[in-house]
Length: 361
Image (cartoon, rainbow, N blue to C red):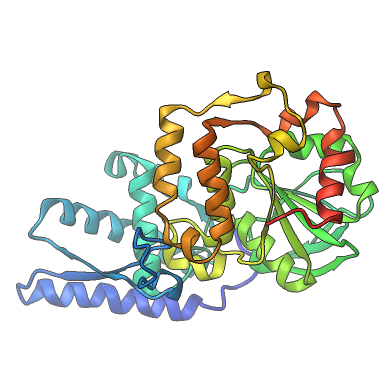
C-alpha cells in the first residue's frame, strides 16, 4: 500500500538503519563477531512484594545475540532480511503488513512468529513503534456510534447511522478532525455482542461510541481507542465474558500485551473501567445453572498464572479479587447468557443500569 503522507520519523530511522548495518559490516571486516544487545521489556512479573519496576516502562535487562550460537545467527539473519524490507518501505513511503513480509521469503522465515519477533527486535533496536516502520496490521476492529473523523482524507461519518459498523483505521496516525457528542465509550470483547448492540439500536438510544477488537485487540484498535479517549476526554468501559480469556483481554487493553511490552506506554489504556461480566453477576441477574460452564483444567491453569501478575496485586486488586472468585467458584459464563431473560436484556437493562449507577470497577 502506498502511503499518502511521509513518516515524520522516516529520515531519522533510515539514518539509524544505515548506522546499524554499518556497525555490523565494520565488525565483520575486521574479523570480529557482531554482538547485538537487545533491551528486554515486560508488562508484568510474578513479584508480589511490591519491589518490582514493571510499571516504569524501563528495560528489565538485555538479551545478547552473537554469531557464535546457531540460533542467534539465524535470528540475526532474519532480522537483517526484515530490516532490508523495512528500509525499502521507508525509502518508498509504502506500507506492508507483517503477513506481506512473511510471504516475501517463506522458505527462510518458515513461520509468521519468526517475522513478528524480528519486527519487535527492530523496534527495540531503533527505539520506535511498529507503525513508524510502515509495518501495519491487517485491521480487524470495528466502531459505531456518535463519532465522525477522517483518515488520510477519507471521511468516516458514524453519526448519520450510529448503529452501523465501520472498520477501525489501520493508519491511526493519520486520523484527524475527530468530532463526537458521545457521553462514553463502550469496548466489547466480541463481534457477536457488538452486533447484538447494533441490532438493538443501542447507540441510537444511548449517546455512546462502541468498539470491538473482535477478541484480543490488535494494535490499531488499541491506538484508536487511546486516541479517542485522549481527544474526547470520555470515560471508557469494557465488557468481556466472565472467563479467563475475557479478563485477559481486559488486561490487554489496560496494561498492554507482553509481546509488545516495549511499546506498552503508547498502547495501554489505564483509564478503562471493567463493566462486566463479573462472577457475582450470576446471582445478581439470576442466571440458571444451564447458562454456566465449568472451568476446564486449562482455564484454571490460566487463572492461576494470571493471579501472579504484579499489576493485578498493585494496581487493580479488586480485579484480582474477582479473578480469584472466578477460580473459587469453578464456573464461567458468556455475556450472551444474559439473553436467557430476553434477547434485548443486555441493551435495555444490564448496560444502562450498570453505567447509570456506577456498577463498574
